[in-house]
Every structure is written in C-alpha cells, then in structure tokens.
Length: 286
Image 1 (cartoon, one colour):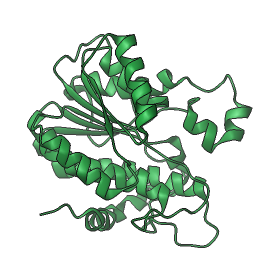
Image 2 (cartoon, rainbow, N blue to C red):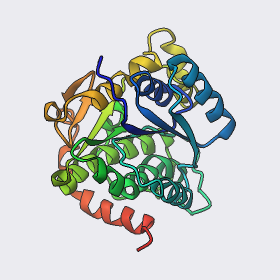
Image 3 (cartoon, helix red, strand yellow):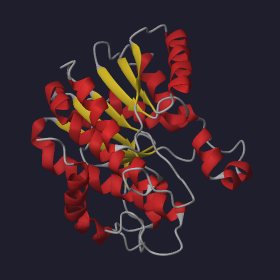
C-alpha cells in the first residue's frame, strides 16, 4: 500500500462522498492525477478542495457528469478523450439505491441507469484510453455483498409488479460482477485488468440515506468509508500479475462470487444477451 503512482491518470465516479471520496483521496495521496466525476458541482468542488488540501496534491480535478444519463456520459467521455491521454485506472464507484420506481428522462429505471448503464457506458467509452495505458490499465467496479442474494436476470429494468428497490440494487450489483467477468474475457489480451469488489458494509452517506435502519441498528459497527475503500485502493496499487482479471475481491483477497445453495452460479450464462442489450442502449456513435 506504500506504492506511489505519480504520473498515473485515474477516474473515480461518485467521488464527492463515501467510498468514492476515500478512494480519490487515497490515490491522490499516493501522487496520482485524479479526475473526480460527480453529479453535483457544489459538492464536487467542496470535496475537491478538501482532497487537495489534505493530500497536498494539486493534480486533482472535478468533472461534472450525471451517471444516470447516457447522453451526459457520452459528452463527458468525448470531452475527456479529446485530451488524448492514457487512463491507467477507472474506478466505477457511483451507485444508487432508490426505493421507488423512478424513470429517467431517457426512459430507464433509475437504479439500473446509474449502477449498470452508467458503469457499462463509462467503461466501454473509455476503453481506447485504457488501451493507451496497457499493460498497466485496470478497471475496478465497486459492487456489493448484496449481489449474493440474487441470480443474474434479463429483466434489467424490474418490469414485474411490486417494485423492490433493494432487490433491484442487488440485481444491479450481480450484473456488475458478471460484466467484469465478461470484460476480462473480451479484453484480456489488450492488457487491461478488470476487477469487481465488495467494500463491506460501510457507514457512508449513501447507506444512511438508502438503508436508514441498517445504518441506525449498526451505528458504530459499520466500516468507515476509508475501510470500505481499502480494497479499491489496494486493487489500484498491486502489480497486475498478482491479481486475477475478472475476479471478485473482498478484504484484499479474491472471494467467491456465489454462496453455496444460493442458486446463482448458473445464471451468469445470460451475460452475453445482457451485454448485447446494454450495448444497444448505449450504442456509441460510430
């Protein structure tokens, strides 16, 4: 964890609070050039100046982008790509657990839009820059232990009645783990490493807002944001030959993606058709 990463370009999504903030700060403190992607300009600016002053690293920048909007992500990635610089580390951290069924202006269910489409579009559209940083490029996606409870399903937008935000979140997080496997298989020969991870249950603003009972009942027992971000930063710093692309990590070690008898392991077979439908939703301009 003492490794320095001067000269490495990193993007962290959802970086103004919680695990995203702690990750951005952890990378900045080790000398990286960090681009914090945040939806809210004011909160992003406050987080940015806090990180610059605590780390003494001035190479930290704010990029304003709404991860629930494909068109916003496209304009951010094309703006960013015009710098034509290699991207060494992409941390897909931005996440959402919305309990009510909300639809975005692009017609997508909101949890799915942020957690799945946002992660997919960001990664796919930045692949050319990751390619420039190969063989040292890596993509780290912050998933959740919630994904253990549910198999992969093609019903990405939860079309059934009785919408359940917690279940939708768990499904989204399962998609992220399966997508990481798929990317590793598709782009492994490009020298880009793909990893997903579970931060443990951390006391973050997101958890307080989305799961107030859990937050209250476990007050003082949850991890700090820094403890939640520890494995993300660890994955960013390790020599790639010591990591397994496509794997799921917890507490600095590779972890199983399926619990015994949970009936989830065969479900990853549908990832190809999920990948195709995400691709058509995001259809990058040719």
